[in-house]
Length: 100
Image 1 (cartoon, rainbow, N blue to C red):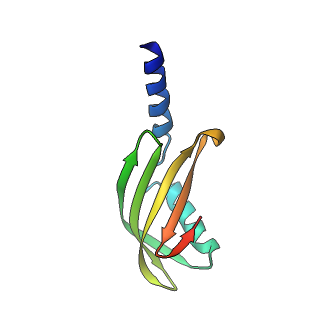
Image 2: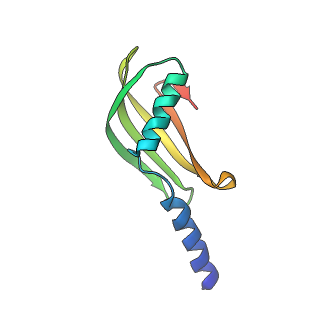
């Protein structure tokens, strides 16, 4: 019983460290991902969480991003926990262009 409680606590602790879909630092990272691929990020709206996987420590989010060159695009992005780094990471997909 103590081992189960300890494992549950570690899962909840790692998941609790995941930032929200609209977290300021997540938005900053998305902006950098878009701009490092040669596009000008203007803003992002209609942000919502689509999937939460507390066992894999993942949030899948979606929003409408305004990009100078292409207009408004609906993007999905994944916020995931990387245990080895003791930190989270973000992956972004815009239409058929993968921004990693």
